[in-house]
Length: 544
Ligand code: ARG
Image (cartoon, rainbow, N blue to C red; front, side, top):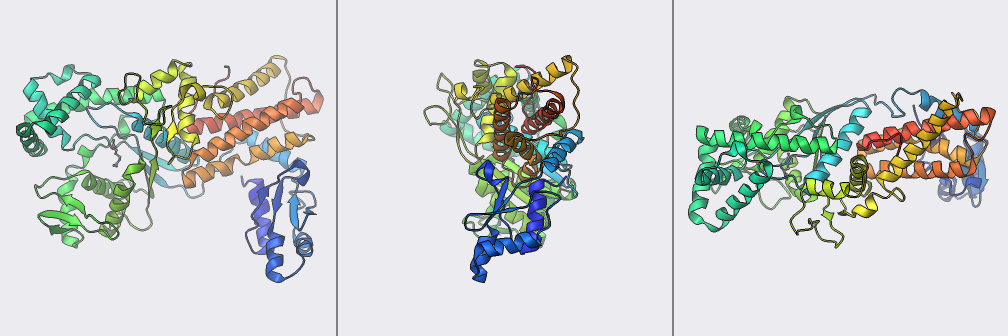
């Protein structure tokens, strides 16, 4: 369904030939929307703005949508939607099998690269953010009818395995008996020796080559490290209630066989050239070249990302590829995208976007740490929130806090604030949903029937209807611009309007058609709250 403001916008645009810049009215007495288009045109044409406004209204045919538009002040045009139109919009929302989202007429294949933790290491707070944000994109883009292909690009191949394998051998460890915590500790021991012990570092570097060259003993240890890590990742995904499964795993190691082919293509096309022994792509605008193959023959993070793009386009047939990582990787992706375009791996009609997010800060404004001063793991954050609230509420608190700020901004992990059921929090929206559910439950228990929205006399009822009718547009906006905070802001506004509605409009205590119409309005609000929370990956409880 096209939203009411969009319909109105299109009509006004057709008459004036310019963007009407339709805005919500600032006060109920001004109607629902306002446009300053007459003021702008008047300036160009050198005519009195109110006269231009009158001309526009004269030529505008919107009787089927609104009351006769008013001219206000110096020449603003005010629009008030017709009550029956608003009522009809809400009723059709109630009947919409798609829950009010606009199913796209141009479905795409969208690869979303998110989560991507590293083998033998705990997931940290950064992985919490990419997992939550990527999951939201997955839900939103799927809901509007795209085919989403999640790709969990886990770090399961890099040079760190050289030192890990050497350390395992030195300590004669049975890796199969390790937990991810143990592996994390092993990683730290190995990293410390790599830093301080020259002899160990040399062996570790040599081990990278033996391992990547297919040495059996090395591969077995590597396999064991991967095998103990995956269940721990899945455990985190379950705890976070996100959509990722083993089917979405496409770790760095899965590109290994593609690398020699890719190198040959790059050399043949002349896109990559040898410089001081390394095979490089010089990308305009970047000081350092992208190193495809190091002088010692090894491949790095960027090469794997080139291979990943190549496969996502050729085999997965992506129309759009979205990467969700820490904002500090923005430069890496900009260079990889540019290099992939030069190489022909990423054709012009395939969109590649990097969505970077900021840091999670503690109450002291520094990167969040656990109580004992360690860098926080994903589990420790969830534990902290669950100390304050039941798991589904704690999770709502975390996800909403993560998504409701602009993604690029750092956000402060203030558990006590996040779990409040008042203010702009996830639990507040869950509570709004539970409360409206309770009203509908009561109506059902009392045998009160409702179907369509038929009466919208109170301004706040109209406002609620108007807000509801804008849901599809907000979801489209998030799908396009990847800014979940807009959906959060929308739901917060919706919950606020619902609260104002309760204040003025008794529901169960009203009677007859007014009552059934208000119940239908409540049902539509419940539906949009549930759908909207669902798109954020947040559970909408019936009771709280
Ligand atoms: N494993 C990386 C990290 O933990 C993130 C990988 C992101 N995806 C990619 N295609 N590079 O920072």
